[in-house]
Image (cartoon, rainbow, N blue to C red; front, side, top):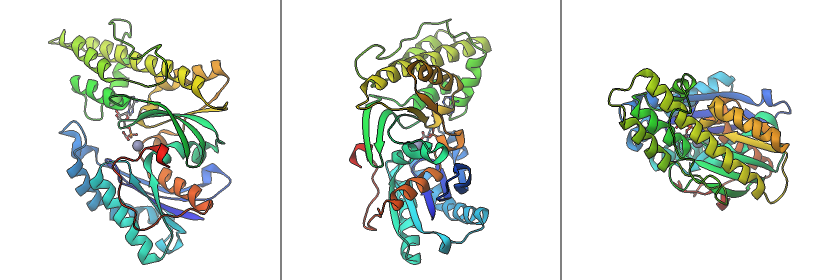
Length: 340
Ligand code: KG4
Ligand code: ZN
């Protein structure tokens, strides 16, 4: 079984082909991601209209590239899967209409996939992780703890009450004049810095539940930064290290709570989303899991950040169970996992 996946919900134009295979290493036949980062860099964030236009321009060549890479044609696909939300509506529309057109023209089954479900099922694509498991989804747009019970059954244990962690990384990095998205550059600076030089809050630490908050921390980091009209590289590194540690501490504390909140025991703790690339976060989550007797799973970075392989895979899991979607379905800018 081969599934074509299309992802256009943010600033990545992505097309992938996955197949059912016992060996995870043999599942991805093509995984092409065209990142629009350069188009948005001057604005310090994703501009929805620019993104939608870029998706329109790049989706066709990205599709051609994926087919070429897999040495397959559209006729070889068993179904077409596409992100139908949540995300920036203009971009989602481009992907969704393209997928519907393909499905109609080729007379192939069609699957409208929730982007968050794509992230949530990725550890099954990369590592065959069995249900149920605990997921921390931590990216520029999303930040939540999810009890993944089975396909389509997700219990959100807690989520951010303001900014996503990646967004906070990007905003603080912007103060430091790092290019958007600044998370990776901030991590690099933090590696040279002293995380104890300043005092930053640990939002919601110790409070009941596992909700997260990063907006106050972001502001606190800005206040520290304002004390340095002419920061030296060491000042920048120290603020970066202090900020990164505060984010990680806060995520670890909330993760401890999330583990307590599970409705049934799990064996695996999984992290996904762009911020999962952060080595300090990975290290501390892995230590936490060791303490709690859980197996820590982090999919490869290329599958943690936005991609279409995760959408094709969610399509494959759904199609294998007999699900398909109606072609009448529209784009959904908001679409919580709990609605599945
Ligand atoms: O999942 P993703 O590619 O896109 C969505 O937001 O959906 O995540 C991108 C986010 C950006 O905010 C980026 O700064 C952050 O992930 N990020 C990192 C690192 N690498 C990417 N944040 C901290 N440390 C990193 N190494
Ligand atoms: Zn995402």
